[in-house]
Image (cartoon, rainbow, N blue to C red; front, side, top):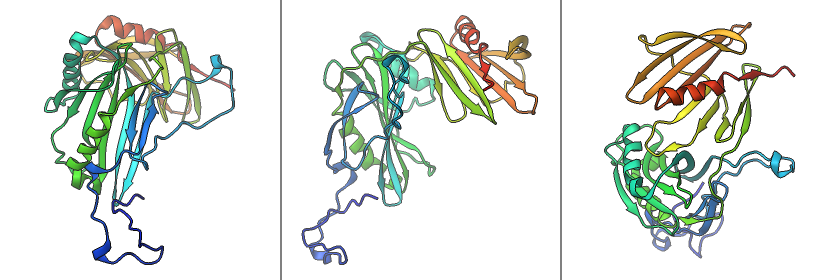
Length: 321
């Protein structure tokens, strides 16, 4: 647990210093960024952090040949515990690309797609060849956890876009504007590292209710295993609805969705399809012998892109070892 009260030279382990000798409290926005150049997203870029805020590293496993190594993490999280709350940074790949002339428009379109039109978008000066825009949301008024206080869209030399987002949780919400100021100081330190963004043919396996499911993807698609889902997706322009399928659990299709037949795990299924302002969508489900229900949900900007994703996800297999 981090204390925002600076220790004094007279402090002892068993006796706090007299009140008149205690140093003043450091506002969150003024916390020193002692951890300089911390690489995130497998050396996509680096950022300065408070000393006690270290990114969570993936668990190390047995050493493997390069071609057999797992793909780099697509999300990195770091937390700073404070009395009664947390200040959280999440950096993640968006699977989107941009061009100089439409970067800001892409950021605005992406925020609009997420219902965040009230956020302020401004150019963020960072070390070249990185390019970035800062996102400042309204001061949080909700009392639930996970309030966003600041974010940055960051594009590398290759045009691939990542997001660094900062949240306050618990009692840290009380000083949301101060934590936002700290986040702004942190994103101003963004600097490039050497790894370009890349996805390659990959596969993933998850266990759902005791069943192992595996999905393989062709080049330019990625499969990301989660705790209870497999996510299949590919790169799209920033602001464009994602082209992806999620295997595991999904919300039901709307009542007016059209129905068409299909095959999943060598079994006939019924797909429900519909379109809305977010693009084209399809959902299906399959009840297995023990009454476990497997859900598959796909979305894309166009019907053609949706069909490309569905053509891959229907190759889902259940392993039998």
